[in-house]
Image 1 (cartoon, rainbow, N blue to C red):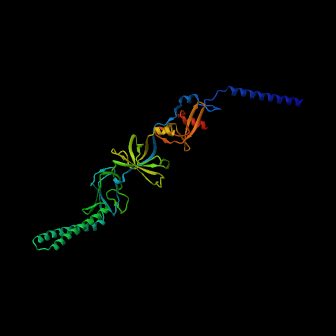
Image 2: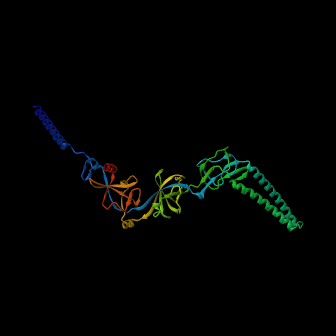
Image 3: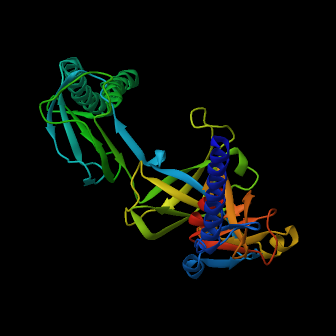
Length: 378
């Protein structure tokens, strides 16, 4: 009797379990679909996202080829002067400020130094000897004209004058080594050419030592150099004489045009790049030394070459850079997308050109592509 009751209880539980499974199955069948479901064909766009994406066709490349490089502005070394002290002393006067424009011959510094005492004495002695020798020469000339002095005595007087002049020249050359001239017992430093003060590390009353860091620098900024970084992968495409466009983040609407004057023959050991030198006219003084810039190297209108080489192009904003790989999302239909990895051949600010990975007529996603890319990846 107890056994029969146990069997009935088991049957009731089994029936209840089957009923629960049926109810659950019905509820699952009747549940609404999610907005972004995954089907056997892959990821499908939601209705909202489908309205907001934008597509662009892959077409034959017809633009100019540009290579994007980075670079740094520097002063033209041929029009750049740094004053390094070669004696110990004290700066008694400074006549300029950082950024000033100075004309050639302007007195910039006055330096007092014990080392100048002996030079000052030598100069005064040589100048006195020159005056004496000139007076003696004048007297000998009159005596020679009157027949009192011999020609030999006249020649000796002329030689004394020349020796005194050479002694003055010697002292002045020694002063030139120090970078200035001696006036009133003070070393006077003058601007060697007209330009702007681009660095200043000196104030009046400062003690200076021989071999210190440069006290100031002058540069002509109307023409500057841009040293562009050319990596090994661009060597076959960047040549001397190519036209370039230089832009700086400080002036987003300004383009500076120039030409590659020289391409180095050896790699920079620190940066592992080849340096391309570009001369830029800088009459408005917008480009400053040490400013970082972007350099676009123009290879000319190569639409015909692109057609022959089979290059295709698409908008640069469609490109996705992930894990150092260039990728795009290719649209087939709302439930069919492909993520394609590419190797750009050329790239401008607006366009990417490739040789493989895409075909003409493909559609790439240009807006909300990152959202689609991430959802496909997940």
